[in-house]
Length: 84
Length: 175
Image (tube, rainbow over all chains, first blue to last red; front, side):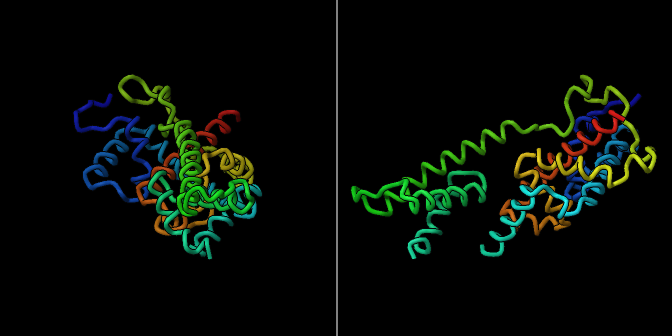
């Protein structure tokens, strides 16, 4: 059983930090707290793994496989960006 | 000519009314379309600029409330709060996906599911996730393309990826 000190983060908070953690934008203090939580929590460790796998699988989707709507949207974005 | 003269001031005005560049650009675009198609008739009761800007503020307000409505429908949680107990800890253990057989996480099987999941994401989240994770653009590049701040981009990315994970999890549970 995890003893909850005031400075510890709980699972529900940890899942909200995952993207900032992966993007490297957590403060050093928060990163330490997040990593300490992961070491103590197999569920959040599994969660982080699932998110990483989600990213990997999304990366396997070919741009050509996207729906026509999503592709058209993407083309529009790029076009606007180049002309902007 | 006309467009060239008013485009930037119109964009600035629209941008001051809504939280992001894209909505502002759409409102400006909409305004011109209305003018060009003659939906809006200039009757000379005010200056052209006043008339034009009045149309713009109306269009921007409509576009802004649509966007706001959409934002309100988006989940603010990465994970359904029902999955946690009162102390904020997971109620049920999570599966280790890495332990699934290779077959079940075969990319080809998941591509169609992810494709439809991407289509179901709110537009801004979909754009960020596609640009980052499908197209492989960097954080900075995505901010440039979408005209969003880095913090905003991370929030959209976070919600989008969280939602995709949720969908994959539900599919895996179906077995």
